[in-house]
Amino acid sequence: MNNFEIIIGIENHVELKTKSKMFGLGPVSYGETPNTMISEVDLGYPGTLPSVNKKGIELAILAVNALNMKIETLLTFDRKNYFYPDLVKGFQITQQFNPIGSEGNLEITLPNGEKKNILIERLHIEEDTAKQTHKNNLTYIDYNRSGVGLIEIVTKPVMRSADEACAYVEKLREVLLFLGVSDVKMNEGSLRTDLNISIRPIGSKEFSNKVEVKNMNSISNMRKAIEFEVKRQTEIIMSNSIVEQETRRFDDTTGQTISMRSKADALDYKYFREPNIMPIQLDDNWVKKVIAESPELADQKRVKYVEEFGLSISDANIILTNLEITKFFEETINLIPSYSKVANYLITDIQSELNKNNKELKDIKLTPFNFAQMIELIEKSIISSKHAKTILPIIIESNHETPLEIVERMNLKLISDEKTITNLLEPILEANKELLPQYHERPERVTKTIMGQLMKVTGGNVNPDVSMSIIIKLVEQKV
Image (cartoon, rainbow, N blue to C red; front, side, top):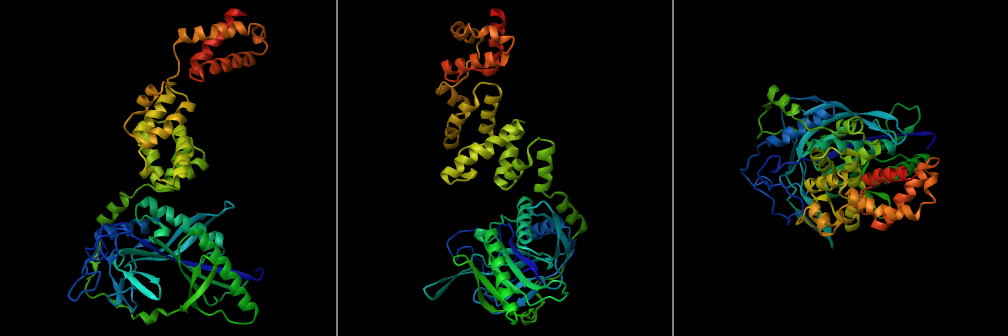
């Protein structure tokens, strides 16, 4: 590969997070019984007319703005004509000639810390096709997905490695997730990635034939597909053959790409204006309002988490990998501003419980309110961090008791009464009277030894701050 340069461009199809479809009234919901989330428009019934989903346009504008693109306020749609079983109308409504977004960029960070701007050529709105399932030489078609709103985001061929391609899709996913544009779940198909891969001799200005690898469903498979395709194309060129322009798919069981069909030219689609949707001039003030109300992006939150909340960059990144965890964190710190403690429990103890039971936050009983109550009990030294680990699994499984009620039921309150602690310390000090004279020379050793024995006597059920204060006072009196 030392003599060749890798050229990668990416097309992402992103399902918009709307309640109904892009041009019809069919509801949008993943995982429902096949062919139950449909309308007459989705099935291409004669006489049905499309109408544009306003929310879909809003989401597209948010994406265009976040990707630093020029916004086209004259909204027009076109027909992409082809016959395929998953396209019941025989055409797809899209934006071939006048995309809503053009000429943008997205900054990525590579594993070595280097930053790179990925140039984006266009973003356009279109509708999804039906889902096909092949089984026992039969093809089953589910039209639930037919007509779901999509944005297609097309980069320029500027990526030069699998690292860059993977970092770009990961960053794009983060941006769209925090904007609320899509849930971007690659495993469910709401974020689909097509790779356009070619190689050329270093120094050459001409592009070679590109190979499109369709519908990648994970970042790891993207990397494997790129690595395999680069190796395959290199071997073809080194054998003095020509790489055919074609469409391939990735087989994750073999780790190889497999030919599907020769690549169709765009002219085959016979694009023309969609006659049933008149041009729509978007109001400039409305567009500005949509942008002004744009949700805070992960990059903005990351800066705040580190600079204002004092979190480490690694802890901030862990929280920001999951929108549900991010919202939970922010709802909790609005109740109790113990940023580091909340973050630590959330990404260690709570995440461990979730992983152990293969659950997500939405599947458990823990709420920001009772989580904040637990943190408050720790802050006020009513319980120790050890006790928090004991009650946390109970809070996660049940919301019938408050954290304080659980603590009282299990008798986990730390002993904070000075008289009680003093009475507990007296026999300990008597048993260690030979150690006490060392206090002036080695005060920390003496006080820690006494504290350790107090913790042992009480089973760790004593307020450490109050206890240490009393230990120092009593030792100084005795020496």
